[in-house]
Length: 104
Ligand code: FES
Image (tube, rainbow, N blue to C red):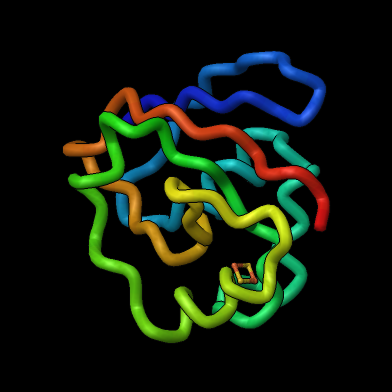
């Protein structure tokens, strides 16, 4: 599945992702190093924060309480915030568009 990502400098890039890995792993694998993912994907660092384009939001797995709590600690939280390590990529998400959230 293709992931369309906009980085903090406003540049857009399309990444050929792999289903079964998280969005975070796919972004890092695609060279998006500003997704630090310091905790390695265990939902405790919030350095994998992205904004998901509205049209894709509803199709994502629901947010867990842990993800919600962690996002609440971010000053950059928006309506369309998600932690990318909590989103498994699948073919249904082919074409998803996300923007790397600002550093908090
Ligand atoms: Fe740490 Fe997602 S990688 S919360």
